[in-house]
Amino acid sequence: MFTGIIEERGAVKAIQRGAVSSYIEINAETVLTNSHIGDSIAVNGVCLTVTDLTSGYFRADIMNETLNRSALGDLTQGSQVNLERAMSANGRFGGHIVSGHIDGIGIITDIKKDGIAIWYTIAADSGVLRYIVEKGSVAIDGISLTVAAVSDMDFKVSVIPHTAEQTILGSKKAGDKVNLENDIIGKYIERFMGCDSRKMPGSRITMDFLTENGF
Image 1 (cartoon, rainbow, N blue to C red):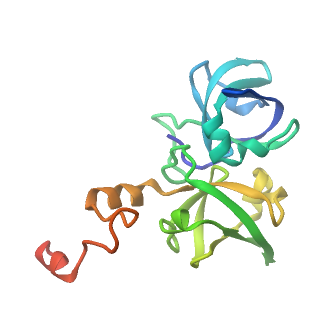
Image 2: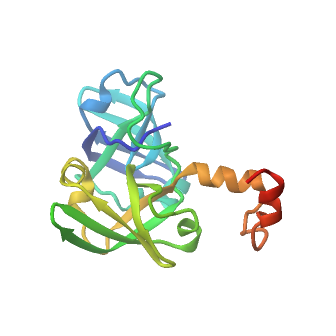
């Protein structure tokens, strides 16, 4: 599990694509501390398993399914990436629960400055937007951010200078792809309540239901 608090920006040392699987090597420093083969490191929000590491970089295998369902497939040698180690049991929970499993790819459609803040507008498909709520959490390239506004086509986040400078978000431009992960709590609630609209239109939550259960 991750928290969406980026520890450092790394750089792609090499990326090799194969017919069945691929691997990526990433230059890093901070995330290598106390890391071992078999540990998890989130790369732009995608949970990858370390298969080799040495002084200055680590390697991780990538399944083609991961490349197809995330923006990792667009990375090239020299690309900057956000890195975060899996949360330790005694760590601080600075962001929100991030699994490292990408729900979809978003497209940055607009970037505007507002005083010290930077507003990003990100278009996404309905399967992602249905879980995004104003003032809720979303992981963008592994960064835990608060949703400032949401519509049927896109959503907005407002980023402080520190976040833009310490992550790759500050170097993004309109048209760039980003990995998106929804807050997993909403998906669990939907599943437990049996109101998945992909299988069943509407919701089972009614005024009678709420009254009967003490709300």
